[in-house]
Length: 262
Image (cartoon, rainbow, N blue to C red):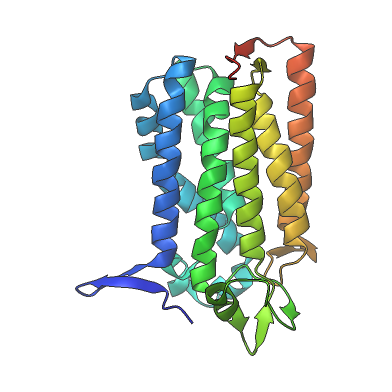
């Protein structure tokens, strides 16, 4: 088992969970800042947005998790703020981030679709890296299996939990998001034009579909009246993504002109 604490700074333990999230954030900001000028958005706008949105998204992710596990936290109030032990619901962070993005873009007079299309691939790669925080915390796993011989030893050993090997659903989602990110980059470089909002729609459909399937494998899902909350939200994301494509086509939203590379 890997120690969830990466290293100590005096009495402060720096956890792998936090390092994975911060690493994903740094990469996401870097990629967004590189893409922003292509859509006439300042890199400073990206940085200002992150300074506001990231802490609020963490709060939203934790609040979402606590709400759907309130039976436990109502009896352990002191653990509500212990985010270093895990328990950040991605959907809570995404919802909060989207709300902040809408108001931020409106205040800065930035086209919301442009901002969303910049954010989508950055969020996807950040999610891919962030899922490894679940690996170090031994959470977000699936049902018991006989063996995991197809995996590298360090993953196999870490997935031996409560006397059984567990499906590494964190890994499946990480890979799924990485593939989605790669596809977006290919679309950007190879397509002659992309209509505004299409990248956002692709993100919603791709992530929603993958999450819906992978969530069904997990044994630690947040439940609401006996149903998996994330699966219902995944269906909603897919529906929104499809509607965005329909809506943008109907409105004949302008295309981004993308130079085709040979």
